[in-house]
Length: 411
Image (cartoon, rainbow, N blue to C red; front, side, top):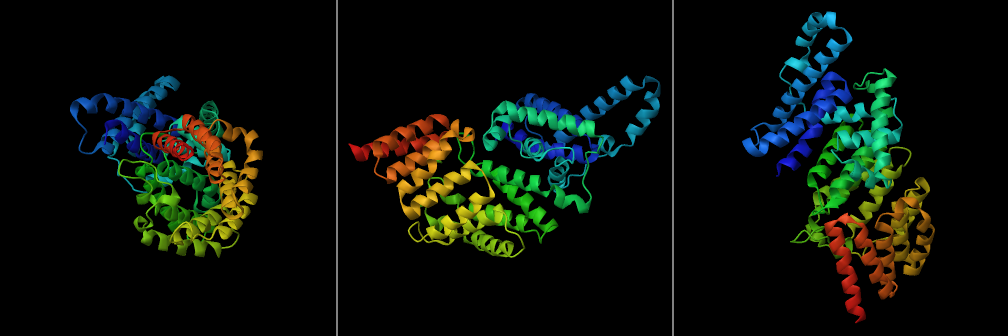
């Protein structure tokens, strides 16, 4: 693992430790950023420490100490000595920090601060916990990068201005903060399962961490249908991971995957959770998506898939959400049941959706349905157009391969 990748993985963990102890998100983030800069300069020359996370925490903690002392001096110079005596007994500053595997979960709920809108809380948490860049978060939300940057900046200002401590909520408040937490974990998993940028399709570190954290939330709230549904969805989706890439890391679509490589243990657990989630009260989007994933995973082949059931589930999901990605999947399911022309007709209203215009998804789905309809020349053109828009190298290569394959059939 490169130093850059290691630091990206460790940054949220270090931040979680500092925030858990200091309750000051902005100051902790600044301290961790300074520690990351120091590590990026020193580790390539001196080697990675035996305990890199501990190294980052110690350096960041010193930066936090220096910043606190500077602030004390600025605000009340005559009280420096007394205030420094308080600093000396503050555990975040002078005790050896005990690493707690639940630190990241704590940070998740802390980031869903009552002063924040759900959108701001999700953006802030993806940055702090997921370690995603502003550009990656923007692609997940289908909005401009500047918009996400503003959300994160306003979130920090809102927390500071609110006067409400940046701390772990009371047990009774967990459910109130649950929605943004689950959305964050879902988006972190998605970025790990299909990386939005780079040379690799999968970021297993992110998808595995998302599953680990959802398991912890499930232990905390075992009777919550949304939590059980999300855990089922992630397990059922991740069960196909081994079949999603070829020997060279190339993307393999669902209909071409070797299903003997699917993780049957994860599928069994996911199906059981999905069934239990549907019986826990009102049905939400995660339960419906888990049910869709279960239908796919239990089929021996694409031909054996119960597409009418999947279509019915997508129709239900469409009524719950205005997410354009759901609309695209709905169109694909429609095409599998009623024919490609029916699916193509459902794409027409999405052409004016600003959230899809800059991305590659709409062009890629339309190309796929046109190929199924026998409109190969137009399909090849749209595959190439979609390839130009994606920032994922495996997706780009796959789309260009599809364009070439369609053209070969035409020649």
